[in-house]
Image 1 (cartoon, rainbow, N blue to C red):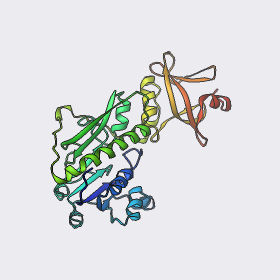
Image 2: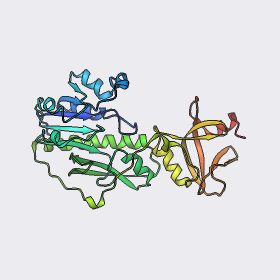
Image 3: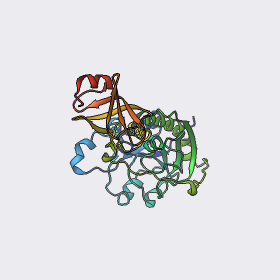
Image 4: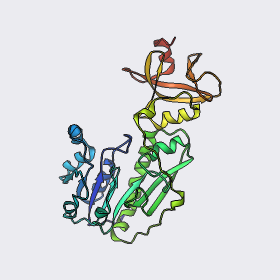
Length: 308
């Protein structure tokens, strides 16, 4: 692999928008492969969360390697501080804020962004969840030159990943993160020396994913069972698929569907199998997490909890 002695900055924060994984693996890989990371820039957190801020994995790595850590409230106002590092390019992973044009212009080689979707599809901060929710047959990773418009910059490379329909958000996030690191290390030398070619995105095919909030995890049994099964997988980790079974608050961690018809939200218990009727068909609960307890199979839950 062709190396470079050029300085770079690293923009990253805690995790992809809904709490899947940190960009620390990318930062660690850049350091391990000999890149001169001149500074790590994180999006500033509110003062009330300052203790948690110090625990950011990228911040821990920066401290470990003696790399300056910046947390500017306003990137435009911090332009001179960023320029002082003399970096020829930058890498951005899950930074969580838009980067203004004045900052993009600081870097002759631009800012490289690794985005876990096949752009221009699934722009925004929830591409992994959205691919699962939409029942996509494939997704992938896009290596992009960052622009001032969200996820609209020209592409250096893309790689596709086939989906089985069984993926969970954490598992798919880890798979795409590992792929993204490999792609970045492969293409970054040419990007930094200016020899990499880009392809514009097709704006006609652009889609934008909605933000996911905690309330999205509250199960609506009027939805089709197929949709709820996807939500269980897409919301794993956060916000998690939550409901009440009898008097017990639970998180459904694994489920599958079955053809059936009944009043949405009503239970179907037979042969140690726990199902809930949906707006269309039935969701069979395979495992769940009762409030204050460990994850357990549905059969164990039926044996220990009163549902009538």
